[in-house]
Length: 205
Image 1 (tube, rainbow, N blue to C red):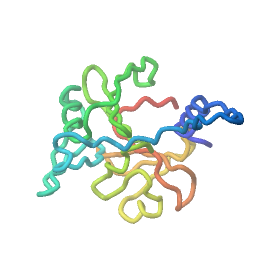
Image 2 (cartoon, rainbow, N blue to C red):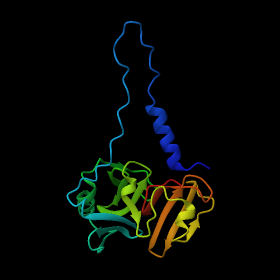
Image 3 (cartoon, helix red, strand yellow):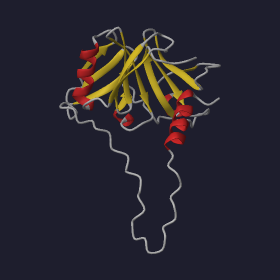
Image 4 (cartoon, rainbow, N blue to C red):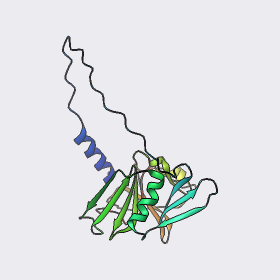
């Protein structure tokens, strides 16, 4: 079963696919336009050089690159505090949006490249990391991130597969309150992680 993320990406690509280029007529010296290059992830916040962001089942951890000291941005903090903290590393947000039809109720979102922060009632309640520009900037404390294979992840954590998930190759790692969910791109040990998430998310199961 294809996962929701894959369907969304395919639909977006289909919608954005340009019409075929018209042949250039003889004598027409105009250059055929080319698609612009995909922009690099910003990661241009004032603390980008000194702080790293680690994925956590209880929120996001900000790691001092010099000392290794970690500070948890926990679920439940005000939206403004969460946005300021991530912007300090990732740079200005790309967009804000709202979805009133989430299974968990109306949710608001703030996106920074591949990372999306989720909010309800003005509080930080979850995050979602997609296989997009800037995803390589994030990983768990054990080094698991987008693109990590199942075989590699199993070397450091126990992976629990969610059977019959409507999202596709869904799994979870961690225990208790510190659980991170994810989706592999396909079955098998060579499959790579295509998405990671924690807290409350806008999924339709």
